[in-house]
Image 1: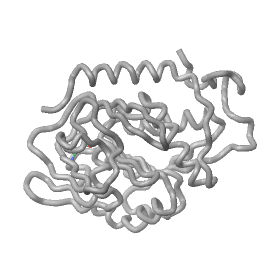
Image 2: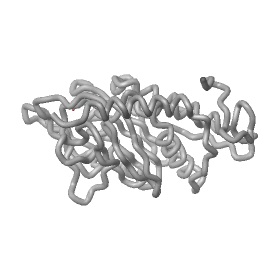
Image 3: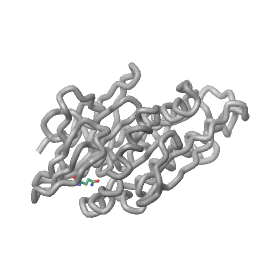
Length: 273
Ligand code: GLN
């Protein structure tokens, strides 16, 4: 089993602890939006994975909380992370988030990476409409809108995706009432192999705009999809240094097993209502 602090780069090279000595060390700054409200799906687990995988490569992840009334300075963060929350928590942060709309859009346009999960993914679209017709305005980073449905879409989910020409599967768990409708020309994060995805019908899941990705997958997402964690890290580093690194692979045996188990559960479940 791989230990937490002593992971081997597969193929050797840097020894037990992994990572380059010092020269290429990067401090990756993450802005974690509203962690005290949007955190119901072990979203901190995603940050922990990013921090550890960065450390194994000899880099450092600094996490700054950006909460209500905190300024968001475009360019200050290499990655913006926003997690999941229920309608009530979403309503509590929506007004503040909209006040940061310009900064979020400017940060993304400047090349910052964005990872948005579930409730956060909904709020980075144009709006979220509750069952009673009331709407929360969104940021408009992702070209979509979300409308709450009557039945929740819950269960293991498997996607097939392609990022930078590399085709992979992403496994996770979804739990949402919102149906997210992408604009016709929007790029989904992936195609649903098993599960519901954005709206239970289109066969699409998530959304990608440049270095920003939004998804309904949690569980948390990154521990069972280390490849995606590395993609996010590489995008964040590219914002800082101007170039996405080519990471040496890590020994991800445990992570790969988690991915396989999760994929299998999703496949066994099939999909759809
Ligand atoms: N409002 C969301 C829903 O569709 C909340 C999603 C989430 O983060 N659970 O249920």
